[in-house]
Image (cartoon, rainbow over all chains, first blue to last red):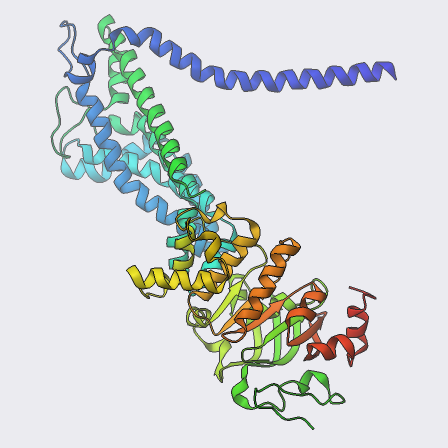
Length: 280
Length: 277
């Protein structure tokens, strides 16, 4: 009896420690990566890094202003394409679908989510780069946009499903049509979840490299308009990190730090602004 | 025999079959809704069996019965709210001002037949926007006219004095009883001809309940009220007519005092005396 008690306490304590440890490791990875980036990239991070173009090999200094702006433009393009489709698709799944058709869409969205990003790059390459005969921001934006769709669909659907039925019934009972109910009651009530899901979605594709390698390519200079090859932070990190130059390695760390910081800031700002405006 | 008096109130011949007695001798204009032979199904499962009754204009009708007896389902057929449930269907006839209710456009119908739910369900918007919602959806006024309408609705629901200085605060800041009166005001704002109340006081304390009941009294000359309640004292206090439901059938329907004092059916008597239910 005594032994069983001791054994039970031991198992209890052991499992508690094990789960706690794994939780700590999860958090630890983020801080480890962040710390490592600051340690290695912090010294190369300067005002010039954020505002200047890259310099040729051998010349020190220079920055990645074009890649920061380029990532922004690519994400803008990707969001303009992926968010409306994903959002409205999610609204359909949550609000209009019957039984079998939504199942097909949901399953397809999950499959699309699982398609390796390099294949999505090849798809954008085939339908945009080949006909246009050159790499472009447009192709890169399309590739990232396609990657955004499945997550936007599923996160929107999940957010809308958390809105209680009684709110919908309240609006329907006042003579609101189904669409009116969705647009004026259900979506506003789910706004927090929808926005958070979309920001996380943007943050996820912000770091994608593979689909950009042969769509947006890269660029050492500014890329006006949408029709030319364009630099982006993840491709810069990749290009600089595999180069043989120490100076470029440090710049790659700095670019990584900028990328992660932008993603984290966007995330926090989106969450704060949404919770601040909520009616609760 | 019975006749309608000047006010339209029917008197009832007690020995006739109660389910048909109410309204059978009333002038046709006094009948707001005439339900005959209503069956209801959730998929293959039938939950209402041949319900027939008449709802009289500007009267309070209470529907009582044990849980699962179909009274809420019946209420939800009257504004077709059951249609939010897949595979639910109603068969039979409901005449609403002599129009076929089951064939009407549900959106148009719900503008004329309002509903208040068991749990207060204000929208996550300001008090003002909650009341204005139905008006805006129906494309009615804006600006000063809208404000006036909102104030009038809040006054009708006896809530104006409590909220007039905080119209732009979230409706979630109100107490449960205030939220329920807000929901009633919201329903009244679009001037419904009929207001359905599905156990509107079950989530409220006795003081808030008393306020809602007072409110129902004040509304009855402008609106036909149908209230589903678990609380028999409530039915006895507020209703002109009471229907007793059991296992998907309407056992008895009559003037409230007859139902509670001299019910014709054994089941009704057993229920109201607390022998089951």
